[in-house]
Image 1 (tube, rainbow, N blue to C red):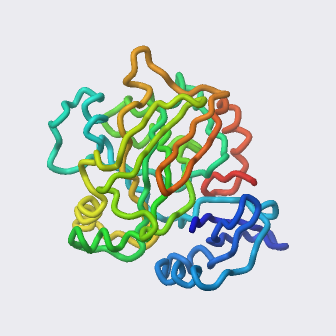
Image 2: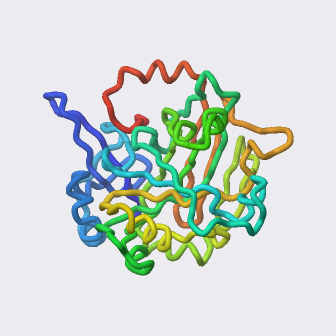
Length: 300
């Protein structure tokens, strides 16, 4: 099962988003309105497995991430052993706690969307990874409680503006470029299994493999990280955790290799599917500037 968001406008111009199961390249079956879905994600997933909803032609709607506008997108930095080493931090010199930074949902987009290069950047960097979705409230959770609260996973590309990221010790600016967070469909957790058992994560640029690793190389696990976060602030249904990227990013190469307009970047994660996005020039940001405040979307 793969769940996507569908946005539509009624005659009055009111925007509504539903969560739907993608049943083909051209159709999806509605599961629930977005906010209703996240009020009982596990229940809606169970019901969707036994009863198909209204079928919608994707040509008549806009595909968007199945994410609440107010959701927190929490990201782990330097979470793969080999990626930690390629960043000159040392292969085994891991802090006790994970490095965390934030994305806003406005930076998220979907498979097939264009990713613009900001005018101040030499290019963009790829970071193929996995995102986990929290399905129930977590406060002072144990590791097992936190992992059991995960209802699904998606393929994700944490596309990064490296110059903006490196301006200060805080990474948020470089991690929130317009349309820089392509997010794949949500796949239920019970169809994915435990990331500690190892899912293959592969990133390709113009068909060439640039990252090829396993989630078994992760240092800070989903359960332990969510439990750690929950001791400071309460995680809500619909919040996301991006689990970090493996080695092979562009900025660490010699010579540096970044994404430029015309490039196509793919991230494929075992059991989750493939994200494919093209890179475009900064002009695209100006073309999008009149859109209503909402996650960046792509029209199917």
